[in-house]
Image (cartoon, rainbow, N blue to C red):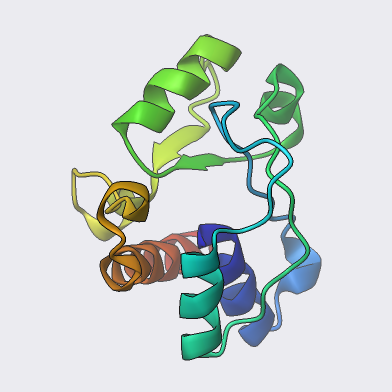
Length: 133
C-alpha cells in the first residue's frame, strides 16, 4: 500500500523523475504474490492506481542502491536488520517517524482494517514527501 500511495503522491507533485519507489518484504511468506485484495479494494476506493507488483524480499544490494529504506513496523525493523545488518548511512527509518510519531503503521494483516492502515500510510507518506522536498 505504501508504495502505491507514495508513488501517487510523487506523480501528483510532478516529481516522478526524481524518485525510484519499490516495495520489498523482510519475510519470505508472500514472495511472488501480488497486492492483498484488501489493499487493492482500498486503493480503488480512494482512486490510487494499482501498480504491477509481485512481492520480493529485501536484499543487501538494496541498501547500496536506495537512498532510504522505509519500514512500517518493529517487525520489519528486526527483519531488515537480519538481512542488511548494519546501517552506517542511517538509511533505515520507520514511516511514521516523519509524522513525529514513534509507533508502527497499523497492520491490516492481523486486523483486516485497511482504512486505519491507509490513514497511517497516507500521513506518513505525505510527511516523508514534505521532508524530502
